[in-house]
Amino acid sequence: MTKLDEHTTYLRNLARKVLPAGTYGNLASDLIIARGNAGRVWDVDGKEYVDFLIGSGPMLIGHAHPAVTAAVMEQLQQGTTYFLPNEHGIRLAAEIVEAVPCAEQVRFTSTGTEADFYAMRLARAYRKRDKILKFEGGYHGMSDYALMSLYPPADSNPELPHPDSAGIPGRIRDDVIVAPFNDIEATREIIHRHRDDLAGVIVEPMQRLVPPVPGFLQGLRDITRECGIVLIFDEVVTGFRLAYGGAQEYYGVTPDLCTLGKVCGGGFPLAAIAGRADIMRHFDRDKVKKSEFLLQIGTLNGNPIAAAAGLATLDVLKRPGAYTKLFAIGRQLWSSLEVSLARAGIPALVVGEPVLFDALFTARKQAHNYRATLDVDPVVSQRFHGLLQERGILKGSGKIYVSLAHDERDLAQSARAFDEAARMAA
Image (tube, rainbow, N blue to C red; front, side):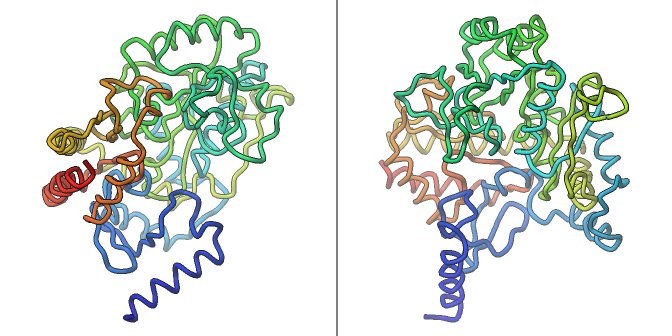
């Protein structure tokens, strides 16, 4: 055994000893990453991967981008956190207001989970109601309310909230209502039935990998406006990814509130709630009654290093042609994946948008909701993903994240890996 092998074994054994399951809880993998650059990462064994995980989405312009690195290094010399407003954070908030259609004001958090949690709480404060409607299969972080019907079993009642984790109080179910994504008629009926109790509706405008069918988001906007219910777009994933103005710009529908994260933190812990000033005023104790004030405190909210990284990232994304290039990379990768699976005779459906997609190993011709995504062959899926990793392609089990840093060499290696993995998995 070489010294490198010994070091890797030591790290893996140490991880299993000090970390439950030997991981951070994000992915079931024994990979330990040593470094990343542009569109690639290297593990502690020195193996190189084309990285389509990109940190689960934040690294949209690639790892160790020079502009981000320079901004972070400059701020590091001025201190790392203050617990008070800083120039980078104020400028980042202003950039969000300029870019995102619904954003009139911004509040920062450190994680998307916090942002979604506070957005739901904000809707309750504004509407003076308790219930939140979410969509089956929708992911909104790790709070008790969010972890209802994210992964409900196929044989469960789709309208009954299903807890996805141990430790969630049973009474949380009473305040969560579940609807089917992309079914506007069923959603309209559910909202009308509960309109007097509903504070807000939270939705991923693109739910995991499932895009909205034409008219769904606009229909949701019309119903919630008619009923005076707060509409929240969870754009932690889609914000600054589908377009500079996020899914709101891309799909042409403006909510009352949105949550942002991942891209706007430039790879550092930063997220945000943004929206209408008359709703956001509940964060300002001077603008509302004491009973209506929403307390929100976080040690690292608007952290200057994260904000500097976010500003540098957004500056790159604002450059002419950035999104044209990003979508072109994604379309080429999508085509390679689709062709390879078809050539191997594997029933599969590639779903998503060009910047974020993956293959469902199914004979279905379309997948418009959570239940449809359950109809897959898990054996072929697991084998295909394992074969890709052996060939130096790193991705999550259900997503391919595209970045601006992926180049022709990355795409060529990916196309070869797709072909070889598909042939062997068939």
